[in-house]
Each structure stands twice: as structure tokens, then as C-alpha cells.
Image 1 (cartoon, helix red, strand yellow):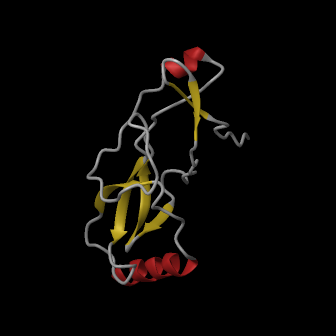
Image 2 (cartoon, one colour):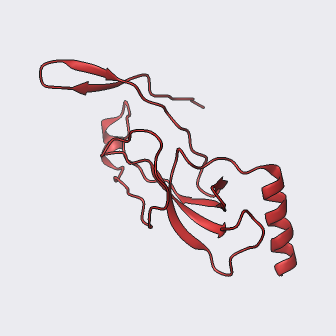
Length: 133
């Protein structure tokens, strides 16, 4: 398994090449629980924006993706227009896991806002889900 990371981001001004400051934010796999603000849910889709590979044929099969739902958060960092940094999230609670939504709310959230939920949040969700059945 590889732990690939971006080494640098370069910007061609036309007369010179500048090295841009950036912060790389890793995102859990689709299906993983996440939390942001008072929202709790799971990542439903991670769009492909930019890919690199030593195999050009493999890259030709990758389709560029975009977040599909209403964007409900704002990035704290500068974003590239080509890579806006949103993932689709199936929200299961919008009140800090005090209750579960009757039907999931699908939104697009900025990756710099989402985090892994606390153990308490995950346990509360499981308790609420069991009591609802």
C-alpha cells in the first residue's frame, strides 16, 4: 500500500513558475462516518478532480467528478477552481446526534470542515438507530 502525498503545487505565471503554499487534507473512504458543525453522516461520494499515474492508459479511464449536492460549508483555505474540495455526505443527523433524521439529507461539504466523529457521537448514533427499529 502506498501513502502518496502531494509534494508541491506549482503555478505557471507565464514568465516564471511559482511554488504555492497548500495544505493537503486527507479524506476517509466513501461510507466512513464524518462530522462537521452539528452534522453527522457518512461520506457518500468522493469526486475525482485531479489524478496522477505512471500509466497514461489508466488515467484515460478515470472520469472527472463533481460534488452533486448543495454545498453547505465554506472552505477556510484557498481552493483551486479546478479542485473545489467538496465531498458528498449523507447526513443522518443535523443536531449533534441528539436525533436521527427520518430521511437522510444529502449535501456537499468542504473537506477542510469535516472530521472523524468522536466515539461518543458514533455510539449515540448507534443507540438512536437501535431504538428507532
